[in-house]
Length: 457
Image (tube, rainbow, N blue to C red; front, top):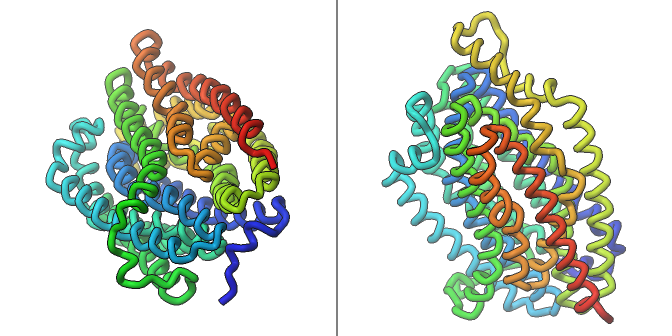
Protein backbone atom coordinates (compact mmCIF):
# COMPACT_ATOMS: atom_id res chain seq x y z
CA UNK A 1 0.00 0.00 0.00
CA UNK A 2 1.40 3.42 -0.93
CA UNK A 3 1.99 5.88 1.87
CA UNK A 4 -0.38 8.68 1.01
CA UNK A 5 0.74 10.74 4.00
CA UNK A 6 3.88 11.75 2.01
CA UNK A 7 1.64 13.85 -0.25
CA UNK A 8 1.30 16.28 2.67
CA UNK A 9 4.89 17.31 1.99
CA UNK A 10 4.84 17.44 -1.80
CA UNK A 11 1.44 18.54 -3.18
CA UNK A 12 0.75 22.28 -3.77
CA UNK A 13 -0.55 23.87 -0.57
CA UNK A 14 -3.74 25.32 -2.11
CA UNK A 15 -4.66 22.00 -3.70
CA UNK A 16 -3.72 20.10 -0.56
CA UNK A 17 -5.75 22.40 1.68
CA UNK A 18 -8.81 21.95 -0.53
CA UNK A 19 -8.30 18.18 -0.53
CA UNK A 20 -8.06 18.15 3.26
CA UNK A 21 -10.61 20.87 4.07
CA UNK A 22 -13.45 19.96 1.72
CA UNK A 23 -13.99 16.44 3.08
CA UNK A 24 -13.57 17.75 6.64
CA UNK A 25 -16.06 20.53 5.91
CA UNK A 26 -18.57 18.14 4.36
CA UNK A 27 -18.24 15.82 7.32
CA UNK A 28 -18.74 18.69 9.76
CA UNK A 29 -21.64 19.97 7.66
CA UNK A 30 -23.44 16.65 7.84
CA UNK A 31 -22.65 16.30 11.54
CA UNK A 32 -23.89 19.83 12.28
CA UNK A 33 -26.94 19.25 10.06
CA UNK A 34 -27.57 16.26 12.28
CA UNK A 35 -27.55 18.54 15.34
CA UNK A 36 -29.71 21.10 13.55
CA UNK A 37 -32.29 18.54 12.41
CA UNK A 38 -32.24 16.93 15.86
CA UNK A 39 -33.06 20.30 17.40
CA UNK A 40 -35.72 21.01 14.77
CA UNK A 41 -37.42 17.66 15.42
CA UNK A 42 -37.26 18.17 19.18
CA UNK A 43 -38.43 21.79 19.01
CA UNK A 44 -41.29 21.15 16.59
CA UNK A 45 -42.54 17.76 17.84
CA UNK A 46 -41.76 17.85 21.57
CA UNK A 47 -41.56 21.58 22.38
CA UNK A 48 -39.17 24.41 23.24
CA UNK A 49 -38.51 23.04 26.74
CA UNK A 50 -37.07 19.95 25.08
CA UNK A 51 -34.48 22.21 23.40
CA UNK A 52 -33.66 23.57 26.85
CA UNK A 53 -33.29 20.00 28.14
CA UNK A 54 -30.82 19.00 25.42
CA UNK A 55 -28.89 22.24 25.93
CA UNK A 56 -28.19 21.51 29.61
CA UNK A 57 -27.12 17.93 28.84
CA UNK A 58 -24.56 19.04 26.25
CA UNK A 59 -21.73 19.97 28.71
CA UNK A 60 -21.24 16.47 30.11
CA UNK A 61 -21.61 14.63 26.78
CA UNK A 62 -19.47 17.30 25.13
CA UNK A 63 -16.70 16.97 27.71
CA UNK A 64 -16.55 13.16 27.68
CA UNK A 65 -16.63 13.15 23.89
CA UNK A 66 -13.87 15.75 24.03
CA UNK A 67 -11.61 13.19 25.75
CA UNK A 68 -11.44 11.38 22.43
CA UNK A 69 -11.15 14.61 20.48
CA UNK A 70 -8.28 15.87 22.62
CA UNK A 71 -6.36 12.59 22.58
CA UNK A 72 -7.04 12.44 18.83
CA UNK A 73 -5.84 15.95 18.04
CA UNK A 74 -2.94 15.93 20.49
CA UNK A 75 -1.82 12.47 19.42
CA UNK A 76 -2.27 13.35 15.77
CA UNK A 77 0.24 16.17 16.14
CA UNK A 78 2.77 13.64 17.44
CA UNK A 79 1.73 11.06 14.83
CA UNK A 80 1.92 13.53 11.90
CA UNK A 81 5.43 14.58 12.86
CA UNK A 82 6.46 10.92 13.27
CA UNK A 83 5.16 10.12 9.79
CA UNK A 84 6.80 13.25 8.40
CA UNK A 85 10.19 12.20 9.81
CA UNK A 86 9.73 8.59 8.60
CA UNK A 87 9.40 7.04 12.09
CA UNK A 88 6.57 4.58 11.34
CA UNK A 89 7.17 2.49 14.46
CA UNK A 90 6.60 5.48 16.71
CA UNK A 91 3.43 6.34 14.77
CA UNK A 92 2.05 2.86 15.53
CA UNK A 93 2.87 3.21 19.22
CA UNK A 94 1.25 6.64 19.38
CA UNK A 95 -1.97 5.35 17.82
CA UNK A 96 -2.16 2.32 20.12
CA UNK A 97 -1.65 4.54 23.16
CA UNK A 98 -4.36 6.89 21.90
CA UNK A 99 -6.86 4.02 21.85
CA UNK A 100 -5.98 2.87 25.37
CA UNK A 101 -6.09 6.38 26.86
CA UNK A 102 -9.40 7.25 25.20
CA UNK A 103 -11.20 4.03 26.14
CA UNK A 104 -10.34 3.97 29.83
CA UNK A 105 -10.60 7.71 30.51
CA UNK A 106 -13.97 8.17 28.79
CA UNK A 107 -15.30 4.95 30.36
CA UNK A 108 -14.51 6.08 33.90
CA UNK A 109 -16.06 9.51 33.30
CA UNK A 110 -19.21 7.97 31.78
CA UNK A 111 -19.64 5.75 34.85
CA UNK A 112 -19.24 8.71 37.20
CA UNK A 113 -21.68 10.70 35.09
CA UNK A 114 -24.35 8.04 35.52
CA UNK A 115 -23.77 7.69 39.26
CA UNK A 116 -24.14 11.44 39.88
CA UNK A 117 -26.73 12.16 37.19
CA UNK A 118 -29.25 14.05 39.37
CA UNK A 119 -26.64 16.34 40.90
CA UNK A 120 -25.02 17.03 37.54
CA UNK A 121 -28.26 17.88 35.74
CA UNK A 122 -29.15 20.47 38.39
CA UNK A 123 -25.60 21.82 38.34
CA UNK A 124 -25.78 22.21 34.56
CA UNK A 125 -28.71 24.60 34.93
CA UNK A 126 -31.88 22.51 34.63
CA UNK A 127 -34.86 23.83 36.56
CA UNK A 128 -38.03 21.95 37.48
CA UNK A 129 -39.77 22.90 34.21
CA UNK A 130 -37.54 20.63 32.13
CA UNK A 131 -35.41 18.57 34.57
CA UNK A 132 -37.15 15.24 33.84
CA UNK A 133 -36.83 15.77 30.10
CA UNK A 134 -33.13 16.44 30.56
CA UNK A 135 -32.58 13.32 32.70
CA UNK A 136 -34.34 11.12 30.14
CA UNK A 137 -32.05 12.32 27.36
CA UNK A 138 -28.93 12.31 29.54
CA UNK A 139 -29.13 8.69 30.75
CA UNK A 140 -29.55 7.10 27.34
CA UNK A 141 -26.95 9.23 25.57
CA UNK A 142 -24.37 8.53 28.26
CA UNK A 143 -24.67 4.77 27.64
CA UNK A 144 -23.01 5.33 24.26
CA UNK A 145 -20.64 8.14 25.07
CA UNK A 146 -17.50 5.93 25.07
CA UNK A 147 -18.22 5.08 21.43
CA UNK A 148 -18.39 8.81 20.66
CA UNK A 149 -15.03 9.41 22.35
CA UNK A 150 -13.43 6.59 20.34
CA UNK A 151 -14.90 8.02 17.13
CA UNK A 152 -13.60 11.51 17.83
CA UNK A 153 -10.12 10.12 18.44
CA UNK A 154 -10.11 7.78 15.43
CA UNK A 155 -11.39 10.43 13.04
CA UNK A 156 -8.34 12.63 13.65
CA UNK A 157 -5.97 9.71 13.13
CA UNK A 158 -7.63 8.92 9.80
CA UNK A 159 -7.04 12.51 8.70
CA UNK A 160 -3.41 12.37 9.85
CA UNK A 161 -2.88 9.42 7.51
CA UNK A 162 -3.80 11.69 4.61
CA UNK A 163 -7.19 10.02 4.01
CA UNK A 164 -9.68 12.83 4.64
CA UNK A 165 -12.45 11.22 2.58
CA UNK A 166 -12.72 8.35 5.04
CA UNK A 167 -12.74 10.86 7.91
CA UNK A 168 -15.62 12.57 6.11
CA UNK A 169 -17.52 9.30 5.76
CA UNK A 170 -17.02 8.63 9.47
CA UNK A 171 -18.85 11.86 10.24
CA UNK A 172 -21.49 11.60 7.52
CA UNK A 173 -22.78 8.08 8.12
CA UNK A 174 -23.78 8.49 11.80
CA UNK A 175 -25.25 11.93 11.11
CA UNK A 176 -27.47 10.57 8.34
CA UNK A 177 -28.40 7.64 10.57
CA UNK A 178 -29.32 9.95 13.43
CA UNK A 179 -31.54 12.11 11.23
CA UNK A 180 -33.35 9.02 9.94
CA UNK A 181 -33.75 7.54 13.44
CA UNK A 182 -34.98 10.90 14.77
CA UNK A 183 -37.75 10.85 12.20
CA UNK A 184 -38.64 7.21 12.96
CA UNK A 185 -38.49 7.39 16.76
CA UNK A 186 -39.81 10.91 17.37
CA UNK A 187 -42.21 11.53 14.50
CA UNK A 188 -43.44 8.05 13.55
CA UNK A 189 -43.40 6.23 16.90
CA UNK A 190 -43.84 9.32 19.11
CA UNK A 191 -41.22 8.23 21.65
CA UNK A 192 -40.46 11.86 22.60
CA UNK A 193 -37.19 12.54 24.41
CA UNK A 194 -36.42 8.82 24.66
CA UNK A 195 -36.64 8.62 20.88
CA UNK A 196 -34.26 11.57 20.47
CA UNK A 197 -31.79 9.98 22.90
CA UNK A 198 -31.85 6.52 21.32
CA UNK A 199 -31.40 8.05 17.87
CA UNK A 200 -28.24 9.74 19.16
CA UNK A 201 -27.04 6.48 20.73
CA UNK A 202 -27.51 4.63 17.44
CA UNK A 203 -25.54 7.32 15.59
CA UNK A 204 -22.59 6.79 17.96
CA UNK A 205 -22.70 3.05 17.24
CA UNK A 206 -22.72 3.60 13.46
CA UNK A 207 -19.68 5.86 13.67
CA UNK A 208 -17.80 3.45 15.92
CA UNK A 209 -18.42 0.48 13.62
CA UNK A 210 -17.27 2.39 10.54
CA UNK A 211 -14.04 3.59 12.14
CA UNK A 212 -13.32 0.10 13.48
CA UNK A 213 -13.77 -1.25 9.94
CA UNK A 214 -11.42 1.42 8.51
CA UNK A 215 -8.54 0.58 10.81
CA UNK A 216 -8.96 -3.13 10.18
CA UNK A 217 -9.36 -2.95 6.40
CA UNK A 218 -7.94 0.35 5.05
CA UNK A 219 -5.44 1.90 7.43
CA UNK A 220 -1.67 2.01 6.96
CA UNK A 221 -1.35 1.77 10.75
CA UNK A 222 -1.47 -1.98 11.38
CA UNK A 223 -1.34 -2.24 15.15
CA UNK A 224 0.27 -4.98 17.21
CA UNK A 225 -0.78 -6.01 20.71
CA UNK A 226 2.29 -4.23 22.10
CA UNK A 227 1.08 -0.94 20.57
CA UNK A 228 -1.71 -0.76 23.15
CA UNK A 229 0.59 -0.89 26.17
CA UNK A 230 1.12 2.60 27.52
CA UNK A 231 4.57 4.07 27.00
CA UNK A 232 5.40 6.77 29.53
CA UNK A 233 7.29 9.02 27.13
CA UNK A 234 4.66 8.81 24.42
CA UNK A 235 1.80 9.29 26.90
CA UNK A 236 3.47 12.43 28.23
CA UNK A 237 3.98 13.71 24.68
CA UNK A 238 0.34 13.00 23.77
CA UNK A 239 -0.99 14.44 27.02
CA UNK A 240 1.04 17.62 26.73
CA UNK A 241 -0.70 18.40 23.44
CA UNK A 242 -4.01 16.70 24.26
CA UNK A 243 -4.31 18.93 27.28
CA UNK A 244 -4.54 21.91 24.94
CA UNK A 245 -7.69 20.59 23.28
CA UNK A 246 -9.09 19.13 26.51
CA UNK A 247 -8.59 22.42 28.31
CA UNK A 248 -10.30 24.25 25.44
CA UNK A 249 -13.18 21.77 25.28
CA UNK A 250 -13.41 21.67 29.07
CA UNK A 251 -13.55 25.44 29.13
CA UNK A 252 -16.38 25.31 26.58
CA UNK A 253 -18.21 22.85 28.86
CA UNK A 254 -17.72 25.17 31.85
CA UNK A 255 -18.81 28.08 29.69
CA UNK A 256 -22.01 26.25 28.71
CA UNK A 257 -22.78 25.45 32.35
CA UNK A 258 -22.19 29.09 33.28
CA UNK A 259 -24.32 30.28 30.35
CA UNK A 260 -27.21 28.02 31.31
CA UNK A 261 -27.12 29.22 34.91
CA UNK A 262 -26.76 32.90 33.96
CA UNK A 263 -29.64 32.59 31.49
CA UNK A 264 -31.86 30.98 34.13
CA UNK A 265 -30.84 33.60 36.73
CA UNK A 266 -31.39 36.69 34.57
CA UNK A 267 -33.98 35.19 32.22
CA UNK A 268 -35.86 31.88 32.06
CA UNK A 269 -35.96 28.48 30.36
CA UNK A 270 -36.82 30.07 26.99
CA UNK A 271 -33.53 31.97 27.05
CA UNK A 272 -31.80 28.61 27.51
CA UNK A 273 -33.72 27.40 24.46
CA UNK A 274 -32.56 30.50 22.55
CA UNK A 275 -28.95 29.64 23.30
CA UNK A 276 -29.65 26.04 22.32
CA UNK A 277 -30.67 27.23 18.85
CA UNK A 278 -27.75 29.68 18.60
CA UNK A 279 -25.18 27.09 19.66
CA UNK A 280 -26.40 24.74 16.90
CA UNK A 281 -26.11 27.57 14.40
CA UNK A 282 -22.57 28.36 15.55
CA UNK A 283 -21.38 24.91 14.52
CA UNK A 284 -23.58 24.67 11.44
CA UNK A 285 -22.81 28.11 10.01
CA UNK A 286 -19.08 27.88 10.68
CA UNK A 287 -18.64 24.35 9.30
CA UNK A 288 -16.43 25.42 6.33
CA UNK A 289 -14.23 27.56 8.58
CA UNK A 290 -13.77 24.66 11.00
CA UNK A 291 -13.10 22.39 8.02
CA UNK A 292 -10.29 24.62 6.76
CA UNK A 293 -8.86 24.69 10.27
CA UNK A 294 -8.91 20.89 10.54
CA UNK A 295 -7.42 20.56 7.07
CA UNK A 296 -4.65 22.99 7.99
CA UNK A 297 -3.37 21.07 11.04
CA UNK A 298 -1.97 17.88 9.43
CA UNK A 299 -0.43 19.95 6.63
CA UNK A 300 1.33 22.24 9.09
CA UNK A 301 2.35 19.40 11.40
CA UNK A 302 3.77 17.20 8.64
CA UNK A 303 5.73 19.98 6.95
CA UNK A 304 7.05 21.32 10.23
CA UNK A 305 8.28 17.80 11.07
CA UNK A 306 9.92 17.63 7.64
CA UNK A 307 11.40 21.15 8.17
CA UNK A 308 9.64 22.54 5.11
CA UNK A 309 9.08 25.90 6.80
CA UNK A 310 8.18 27.76 3.62
CA UNK A 311 5.25 25.36 3.12
CA UNK A 312 4.17 25.93 6.71
CA UNK A 313 4.07 29.71 6.14
CA UNK A 314 2.13 29.21 2.93
CA UNK A 315 -0.32 26.92 4.71
CA UNK A 316 -0.97 29.59 7.37
CA UNK A 317 -1.55 32.38 4.86
CA UNK A 318 -3.70 30.30 2.52
CA UNK A 319 -5.83 28.97 5.38
CA UNK A 320 -6.50 32.46 6.74
CA UNK A 321 -7.35 33.78 3.28
CA UNK A 322 -9.77 30.98 2.42
CA UNK A 323 -11.51 30.81 5.80
CA UNK A 324 -11.72 34.63 6.03
CA UNK A 325 -13.65 34.86 2.76
CA UNK A 326 -16.01 32.12 3.92
CA UNK A 327 -16.55 33.76 7.31
CA UNK A 328 -17.48 37.07 5.68
CA UNK A 329 -20.15 35.34 3.59
CA UNK A 330 -21.56 33.58 6.67
CA UNK A 331 -21.70 36.89 8.54
CA UNK A 332 -23.79 38.46 5.77
CA UNK A 333 -26.30 35.59 5.75
CA UNK A 334 -26.81 35.73 9.53
CA UNK A 335 -27.23 39.49 9.57
CA UNK A 336 -29.83 39.50 6.77
CA UNK A 337 -31.94 36.43 7.64
CA UNK A 338 -31.95 35.90 11.44
CA UNK A 339 -35.74 35.59 11.83
CA UNK A 340 -36.07 33.15 8.95
CA UNK A 341 -33.29 31.02 10.44
CA UNK A 342 -34.84 30.89 13.91
CA UNK A 343 -38.33 30.14 12.58
CA UNK A 344 -37.07 26.82 11.19
CA UNK A 345 -36.82 25.50 14.76
CA UNK A 346 -40.29 26.57 15.86
CA UNK A 347 -43.72 25.18 15.04
CA UNK A 348 -46.83 27.36 14.77
CA UNK A 349 -49.17 24.43 14.21
CA UNK A 350 -52.70 24.98 15.51
CA UNK A 351 -52.61 21.47 16.97
CA UNK A 352 -50.21 22.68 19.69
CA UNK A 353 -51.55 23.58 23.13
CA UNK A 354 -51.88 27.23 24.14
CA UNK A 355 -48.83 27.25 26.43
CA UNK A 356 -46.52 25.76 23.79
CA UNK A 357 -47.76 28.20 21.14
CA UNK A 358 -47.13 31.13 23.49
CA UNK A 359 -43.62 29.82 24.27
CA UNK A 360 -42.88 29.44 20.56
CA UNK A 361 -43.98 33.00 19.80
CA UNK A 362 -41.85 34.37 22.61
CA UNK A 363 -38.84 32.32 21.48
CA UNK A 364 -39.20 33.69 17.95
CA UNK A 365 -39.31 37.20 19.35
CA UNK A 366 -36.18 36.88 21.48
CA UNK A 367 -33.75 34.77 19.47
CA UNK A 368 -33.06 36.62 16.16
CA UNK A 369 -31.50 39.65 17.86
CA UNK A 370 -29.39 37.41 20.08
CA UNK A 371 -28.25 35.44 17.02
CA UNK A 372 -27.03 38.61 15.32
CA UNK A 373 -25.02 39.72 18.34
CA UNK A 374 -23.36 36.33 18.83
CA UNK A 375 -22.22 36.31 15.16
CA UNK A 376 -21.30 40.01 15.04
CA UNK A 377 -17.50 39.44 14.98
CA UNK A 378 -17.52 36.33 12.76
CA UNK A 379 -15.23 37.79 10.02
CA UNK A 380 -12.26 38.14 12.40
CA UNK A 381 -12.33 34.82 14.25
CA UNK A 382 -10.40 32.92 11.56
CA UNK A 383 -7.10 34.40 12.70
CA UNK A 384 -7.73 33.15 16.23
CA UNK A 385 -8.63 29.64 15.06
CA UNK A 386 -5.70 29.22 12.66
CA UNK A 387 -3.23 30.86 15.03
CA UNK A 388 -4.05 28.59 17.97
CA UNK A 389 -4.08 25.51 15.71
CA UNK A 390 -0.64 26.37 14.31
CA UNK A 391 1.04 26.13 17.71
CA UNK A 392 -0.74 22.86 18.42
CA UNK A 393 0.20 21.39 15.03
CA UNK A 394 3.91 22.04 15.61
CA UNK A 395 3.90 20.70 19.16
CA UNK A 396 4.11 23.95 21.14
CA UNK A 397 1.77 22.95 23.96
CA UNK A 398 1.89 26.01 26.23
CA UNK A 399 1.22 28.76 23.64
CA UNK A 400 -1.37 26.51 21.98
CA UNK A 401 -3.13 26.09 25.31
CA UNK A 402 -3.09 29.76 26.22
CA UNK A 403 -4.26 30.93 22.79
CA UNK A 404 -6.97 28.26 22.70
CA UNK A 405 -8.33 29.57 25.99
CA UNK A 406 -8.29 33.26 25.11
CA UNK A 407 -11.86 33.56 23.86
CA UNK A 408 -13.79 31.27 26.18
CA UNK A 409 -11.57 31.26 29.25
CA UNK A 410 -9.81 34.61 29.46
CA UNK A 411 -12.49 36.85 27.97
CA UNK A 412 -15.95 35.29 27.54
CA UNK A 413 -16.36 33.71 30.98
CA UNK A 414 -15.30 36.90 32.85
CA UNK A 415 -17.57 38.99 30.61
CA UNK A 416 -20.52 36.70 31.41
CA UNK A 417 -19.86 37.23 35.10
CA UNK A 418 -19.47 41.00 34.78
CA UNK A 419 -22.04 42.20 32.21
CA UNK A 420 -25.39 40.46 33.02
CA UNK A 421 -25.67 41.86 36.58
CA UNK A 422 -25.69 45.35 35.01
CA UNK A 423 -27.49 44.91 31.68
CA UNK A 424 -29.29 41.57 32.07
CA UNK A 425 -29.66 39.04 29.24
CA UNK A 426 -28.27 41.51 26.68
CA UNK A 427 -24.96 41.24 28.52
CA UNK A 428 -24.82 37.55 27.61
CA UNK A 429 -25.18 38.14 23.88
CA UNK A 430 -22.87 41.18 23.63
CA UNK A 431 -20.13 39.28 25.48
CA UNK A 432 -19.59 37.00 22.44
CA UNK A 433 -18.38 39.58 19.87
CA UNK A 434 -16.31 41.41 22.48
CA UNK A 435 -14.51 38.16 23.36
CA UNK A 436 -14.03 37.35 19.65
CA UNK A 437 -12.30 40.66 18.92
CA UNK A 438 -10.07 40.61 21.99
CA UNK A 439 -8.94 37.00 21.47
CA UNK A 440 -8.21 37.64 17.79
CA UNK A 441 -5.98 40.59 18.61
CA UNK A 442 -3.98 38.57 21.12
CA UNK A 443 -3.59 35.57 18.79
CA UNK A 444 -2.61 37.70 15.79
CA UNK A 445 0.22 39.25 17.79
CA UNK A 446 1.71 35.92 18.92
CA UNK A 447 1.23 34.20 15.57
CA UNK A 448 3.01 37.00 13.70
CA UNK A 449 5.89 36.94 16.16
CA UNK A 450 6.25 33.16 15.94
CA UNK A 451 6.25 33.08 12.14
CA UNK A 452 8.99 35.73 11.95
CA UNK A 453 11.10 33.92 14.55
CA UNK A 454 10.67 30.20 13.80
CA UNK A 455 9.75 29.70 10.16
CA UNK A 456 13.07 30.66 8.65
CA UNK A 457 14.69 28.37 6.07
